Each structure stands twice: as structure tokens, then as C-alpha cells.
Image 1 (cartoon, one colour):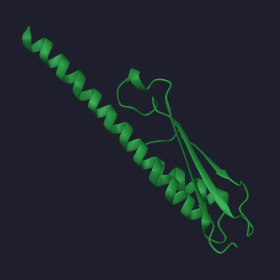
Image 2 (tube, rainbow, N blue to C red; image 1 turned 60 degrees about the horizontal axis):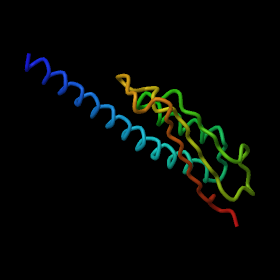
Image 3 (tube, rainbow, N blue to C red; image 1 turned 90 degrees about the horizontal axis):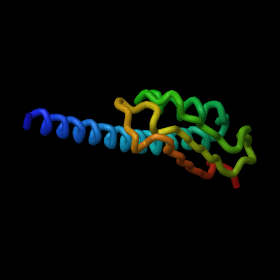
Image 4 (cartoon, rainbow, N blue to C red; image 1 turned 135 degrees about the vertical axis):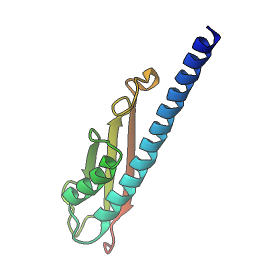
Length: 119
């Protein structure tokens, strides 16, 4: 009886810790994807679709297929002074176990970088 109570509590804490670590991994990967995507967009000749593809490719490495990537401006040209990349994703999608703490919560990050060679 004691083992049943203690083990169920231990498993609950273990899976909760696992899900919080997964959220931390999501946050870190989103920040990395933002940086790499924005970096791809600030070089001369870059397009918004390249930025989106680069950002989504990094997110797919950890199984995030449901993130929304927005690039501003939608058309990058030689006079564009800065590129903004925004990633939005629901936190309750992509977790291993049902984590009620993250239901309805989302991760929304934006990174703005100045383009190279634009005065």
C-alpha cells in the first residue's frame, strides 16, 4: 500500500518535471530558430520565404510542426531596413503527457534585426 502511494506520487513528479523540461526546450529552440531565421533574412538577396523555411526547419527538428511563423515585411527588398520574425505556438500541443498547467497557454516570441548593407 505504501509503495502504491509513493510510486504514483514519484511518477507524477517525474512526468511533471519531464514536461517542464520539454517546455524549456521549446523556448530555447524557438529563440534559436528566431535568430537563425532573422539572420537568413538580413543578408542581401534574402526573401521572406527563405526566412520562414529556415525558421520552420529548426523547429521541426524537435517535432514542432504547428508553429506559426510571421515575417515582416512580407517582401524583403534592397530598401528594407529591418526584418522581424515572429513565432507563435500553443504549448499544450507537442507535449508527451497531458499537462493541464499548459492548456490554453502559448509561446509568442519576436526578433527584429537590421539588414546588412542598408543605409
